[in-house]
Amino acid sequence: MREAPPRRNRRRITAALVGLLLLVGAGWVAQNQWGGSATDQLPGAESGLPITPLSELPAEARQTWRLIQRGGPFPERQDGTVFGNREGLLPAREHGYYREYTVPTPNSPDRGARRLVTGEGDELYYTPDHYRSFVVVDPDR
Image (cartoon, rainbow, N blue to C red):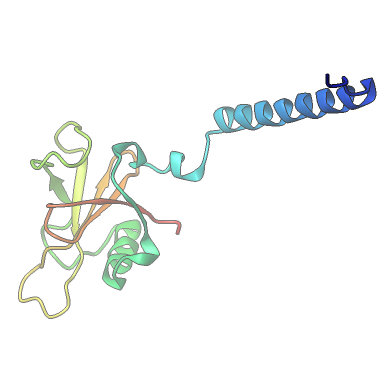
């Protein structure tokens, strides 16, 4: 038959468990009260699309983003026009919610296939293949 641990050990174990529960609870409250992780707060993250830092996109995408932030001027007349989301890969929104911008493709004889798409809720998406796929862009990374 096994002996019960001394009361002092039981108190230490109980205190450690209570402390652990308080830490876990405080972390949960902090995450839920102050908005969770930075990824949770990224506009567009709720779409479920992969998230890619702007720094990992082609240099031309970063240049286009700077133009968008400044409000132009844009090299293509189609830049800033409504993106209709006919493919349905972005979250469904009313017509006019999304705008598209050309990301130049070096040595392409035309606009190429690359685009940045912005949403009225500050979302930023990138497609390298003319709307066949998208990623959410984190412009701060």
